[in-house]
Image (cartoon, rainbow, N blue to C red):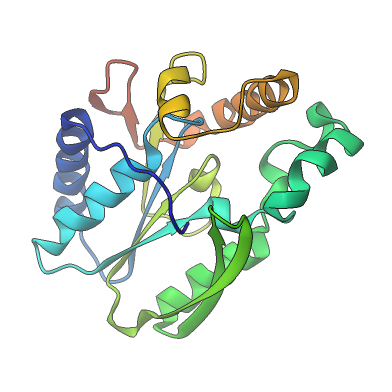
Length: 211
């Protein structure tokens, strides 16, 4: 996403180094890492640091944020959720998985790919075009990223939105009104359902644990 705010701390660098170590053990052509966790858990920070560390090993890793792939537009999403019932619609099915899979397929085939990219200032969706021919790895991050088909390494952050309120505020997340709290709770249930997919866990002390 354009204009996203990253608050990178030593814990992100430490965990990212462990993830990269695991990647290098099992490195192969067109490798895909997915990082899932709840709002404010540090997904984007880990994704950024992992990609930067891989560059030190002459590996070109492209971060892909699944928040760009919501079916509803940012400016319309809140009202749409309220209209259809937050508990009924918030969750895994809000993502355009067909578009995600097309991006993954284009990466694996080394094709040029166009994908959505949310500008967080205007809250509008732009189009990002990437030539995957020279990209070695994808690092997917998002609430439900580990659900993506074809992922080689699934990373799950165990922190819940209850523990990440400070991080959410620091990154300018939505105000904590009743709508937002209901949304976070619905996301919490959906994200936690994906925990069994994890190959690596980032526990609540922000330590990396192998499943």
